[in-house]
Amino acid sequence: MKAAIITHYYKSKNYGGNLQAYAMCKAIEKLGYTAEQLCFTSEKEMSSEIPKQEKKLKIKKLKIAVKVLVYNILCFVRHPKVYNMLRQRSKAVFMFNQNVIPHSRECYKESDIINSVKSYDLFITGSDMVWSPDMFSDTFFLNFVPVDIPKFSYAPSIGVTSLTDKEQKIFRSFLKSYQAVSVREHNAISLLKKISPVSVEWVLDPTLILEREEWDEICSKRIIKEPYLFCYFLGNNIESRKSAEEYAKAQNLKLVTIPYLLGGYRRCDCNFGDIQLSKISPPDFISLIRYSEAVFTDSFHACVFSFLYQRDMFAFRRNAEDRWGSRIYSFLELIGCVSRYCDTHEKESMDYIETLPKIDYKTPFVDFEIIKKKSLDYLEKNLRKAEETIENNEQ
Image (tube, rainbow, N blue to C red):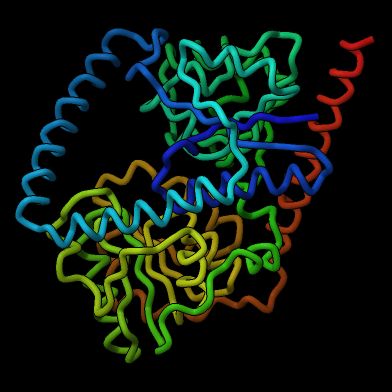
């Protein structure tokens, strides 16, 4: 049985996104099946199902994005060093994306993705922010897959704490053809439970269902020889950066960063870090966390790998109105480290950070191990169920 996984994989420059795509294929292969990422690029900005007022909002956001693009182009002209750093990083991530993660030979669009059906026995909506109302696409709900071909979801993220009535209607319509539904955040269960035609389960992000030893297999060798604090900030929160600088100085650590993660020049990144790295691949990203003394981040997956490699970590808001914080909070709650989420002005200070004891990694994380087993059981159960469906259809 060959499974196709659809997520934000194709040409992704995001470390966490690529690593979860790798992990999903790996986890399925461990269970005895073949799996690969479905290369898919959207040829339209918005789903036809989205209400008109939401389309207007998206058009407004698109105009803002164009202004940001123009600003970044001007910055590239003024800051050629930044352009070179971004190009080096994109190449390093792309090489991993193409050479390590199993994927389809064809790259599909909405207009021809139905042609992929003949190449696969099963379709899975994978993890990451594929069900966010901010980026609705019919394709991520597998609308192109015929009803006789099994499909289920594994840990997609909605990324919001509420859904409008029209968004609920859209979810209800799409999910009725799924054999099973699971989500990545616990609070997403309450959002979908009342509207999903099938039961909704909470499972772990794919990166968390692989063992640490399996990540060791692709982790790069140590990059920075001296003791360091690794900072991985996607947002523009100045307070978190100030705290990182104070922490590194107090602990006598080098401050290591990967600047300009959103693909353009940002003043907050310009002089931030003793060592600024550019040509960093996903295996390098793991290494930077593995060998650090501590991690400061506003990234869900940076928190995940900090946990897997038992690093002292501190999570921050991306900005004052962080819409994506529920993912981090849900994970930290699961491992009993909610105090590590510095989500207020008071908690972003060194006065608060210095009150936190080291994370006790010697004590078993019972709740985590329970949901990990449940996640693996869910994946195996639905792969077996899909296999049975295929066999029955062939008889």
